[in-house]
Length: 116
Image (cartoon, rainbow, N blue to C red; front, side, top):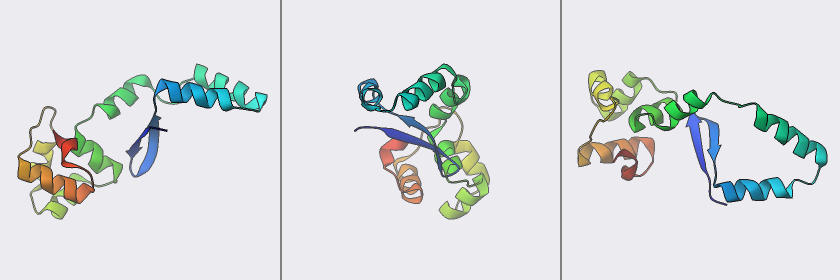
């Protein structure tokens, strides 16, 4: 099954999966009470849509930093840069040099393409 987890402060906050997979999971629920609970939960959002969208579309450096519970200063120290540099990287629409993408990918343990 293909899915993506979205974390905040190191804990999974959202799980995104294709509709087909979600429907398949729903079909597999055997216990009627489970199904009833899921249907009731569907009526009430677990998260505010605006909050979820802001998180999903957040600047990638900021999101990765927040996922780990780091401050801008923490990230700056790990990379050997100033806190103001991290603040600049976290602005909407920021563009990163190849060397910066490489450093960010290393410190976060993810692919450089996350910062394109």
